[in-house]
Image (cartoon, rainbow, N blue to C red; front, side, top):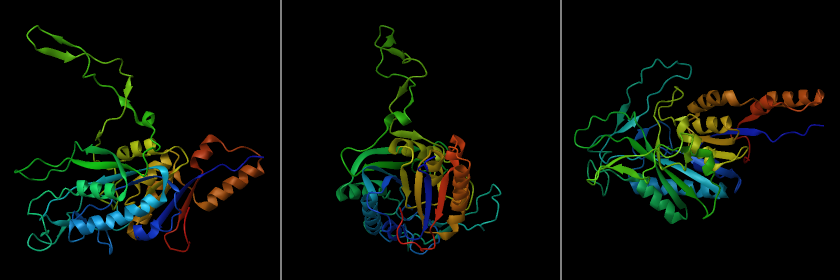
Length: 352
């Protein structure tokens, strides 16, 4: 008789990240990938959201408390991938425009509205107007002090970055992804994310006898691979157009999931947004727990993950049919054998 396979699961929790994290069992998560709201950069219009604090210290204090819970639920060999962007003192905070759930995207982004002004909300103690706040560095140092190992500060370079209209500084075209761990030794599959070799800068070069050297010779064949570098070039073009305007590119998430987990392991995103982490996790045969504060994004997450999930009733029917026919589940069925648990009504006490 066929044995019931270990299935993927997708759990969606709607509510405050800190409160929902406390419902998750200790050391039950293999990898956490998230991008919290950046400080004073965007107002998502939800009470209790992170990012609207008056000072960097207040923002960092709240984020550190959340990361402490992430450390609790993360396994000893787990990894934590944290995306952070920066902001400027004295800048406006943009409010995210609202779109009705059933309204189709027409290819034009609504104009964000401004929140605050340069003489009010723009004032930051300890920072001068137009100062770069250095929030990624501040957060990283605070987490290092908390006990996290900072193993890498990855640069996410965005070739198609949004123009800023500034003539007194370069246009910002990058964000940071910090690779953090709980312990000195942890799971990291370097082979899963190796990249193709372009050239070898240490190879012998041709010269003309005058101290000038020619171009480097090519290193091996085009199929040669090398360890992934710490600058990731990924366009910001969204893979899904919906009501969320700060969507993770799927290609940015894939290396984190492939390097930080094995198949059937559990991935967490406490600031799920449009659900990109969950979608990519399911696509690569991982399970996921997604936490999102804004209830308007829950249907969006379900739609995005619907390709890789089936409802619990469908799952039970498929399993019953398989047992009745006394056959083993096919590879195609196993790939779609994912249970979706929507626990956004707070009816259950604890998950995982």
